[in-house]
Image (cartoon, rainbow, N blue to C red; front, side, top):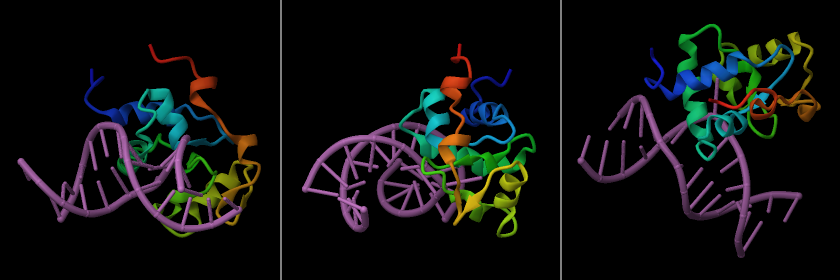
Length: 113
DNA sequence: CGATTGACCGAAG
DNA sequence: CCTTCGGCCAATC
């Protein structure tokens, strides 16, 4: 079934698997998918993620742990609130101890097969 | 169909 | 340390 219909589906699949209280980066997901150098596509996928509810886009940040996509969320601090709601502290639009909450799919998740 | 953009990343100066 | 540039691929204009 819709296996190759969208590169997006692949992204959603990974984002969905992001555990509670954890965050990942676009590049990490891209690397896991093999796109590696096209982390921008992950961002694009997230843009379409609005169509889904099982995709915690608020857990996806850039490699710097900065809430780059917060401007795409409704309200102004929803993304921060969601993360803080999961026990993650936000400071100046940036995740505190980002690497501490960092969740690498290519490491925590089994390789795509 | 050509040009531009986009929630990025990494390297180079 | 900071700024600039290239790359990558898909969607939109």
